[in-house]
Amino acid sequence: MKKTNDFQTCLKLLFSFMKIGTFTFGGGFAMIPLIERDVVQKYKWLTTEEFIDMLAVTQCSPGPVAVNAAVYIGYRITGLPGAFAATIGVALPSFAIILLLAHFLLAKGNQLILQEFFKGVQPAVIALILSAGIEMGKKSIKSRYDLSAAVIAFLLLIFSPIHPILLIIAGVISGVISRSLISKNEG
Figure 1 (cartoon, helix red, strand yellow):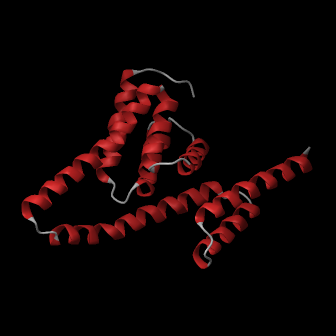
Figure 2 (cartoon, one colour):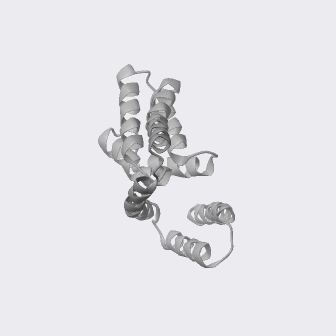
Figure 3 (spheres, one colour):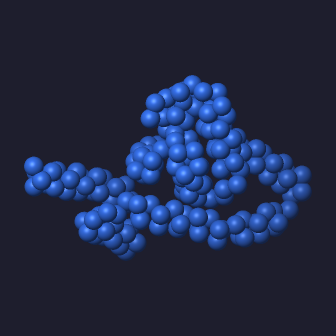
């Protein structure tokens, strides 16, 4: 996609990521379905395949997934101004909310209401993260090999002491080998 320095596009990036940052609890993974809805479906800034690739890159990069996604998408759309706008949009709401919560806790000293609030939000966060995983799986698993690799990785993640980073590295190596073998057989 061609980068533009369109001021209106930067504003759309800012407000889109600000909306996502304001109304999503649970961190970057809970934001993925909302980011996809705006970026892929509403504004069509990325295709579904580009979005999945972006997720792979942003999850492998150090830092919060939502901020990495904002930087990537903003830069991809309008260059540095877009990266800046999207990053400010996704980070500012969390910053403001934390400041308000800190003020509330210092002023009131009663954490019970806040604890009950977070207990109530937890099921929604779990549902958002599960939804994002299922949707990514539907779009990413295109062959029996992909399904087998996903099931094996899931089982190893749940039932073995293998660190997730090692599973990611093994997945990368396995995918490269698999794709190179497929290419050799087709060519």
